[in-house]
Length: 99
Image 1: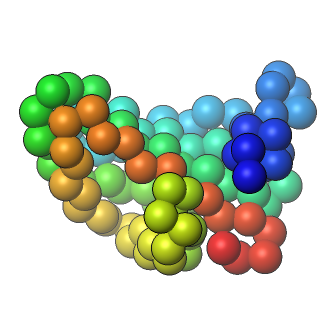
Image 2: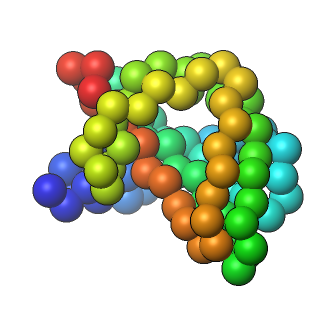
C-alpha cells in the first residue's frame, strides 16, 4: 500500500486533511496529525541523533490505530509516552473502519 495515495488524509491541497501539530513534552520531537473523512494519520518523529522520550497529549487523536510499518495494533491514549531511537519516526493510521 502506498499510504499517500491510499489515505485521503494525506492527499494534496484541499483534497487532503489539514496539518494539526500535537502538543508533546520534547522540543526534539515533532508530532502532527492529518484527518479527512474519518481517515486519520498521526506522525511522531525524533529529529535528533539521540534517543528521545516524549509525552504526547493528543486530545482528539486518542484511539486505536495501526502502526504503518509493523501492521500491528497501537492504542494512543490521552496522555501517551513514547521512546524513540535516533531519527526514528512512527506513522499511525486510523481509517473509517476503525483501524
